Length: 140
Image (cartoon, rainbow, N blue to C red; front, side, top):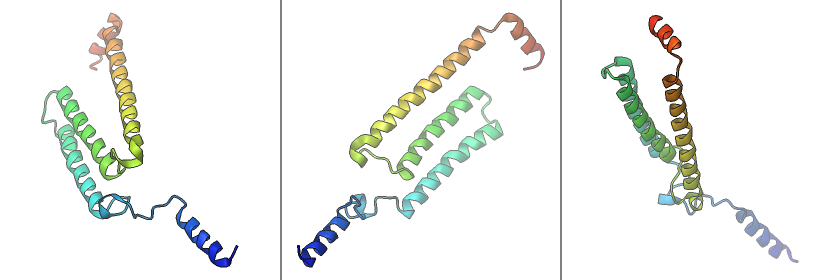
């Protein structure tokens, strides 16, 4: 085996180790986000956080359930913003496995949150009458 053949093989091996060096990255940029993308994500995050903070701190809406619903809706939108702009998740990356992981995570989160709310509701509903009287007289 000559030195040229060995050297050529080593050069091919050095670039064939799984790194794409940004050649086939989406939108002509690198596989990671651009500075503009991070700024857009940051600004959207601030625009979603500020109204939620203002709603809770000012008490503009009298019904706490409505306030909580609005804050939760803003939080869900913010989760999507973070996944797109900071985690760079889309349907094309890693042959769709990141989307499958996202769907699985959403299902688990839904089960945990709905199960927790169901348990808390029924614990409150099935509370012993003497405990309810004590809590109402204590001002809670």
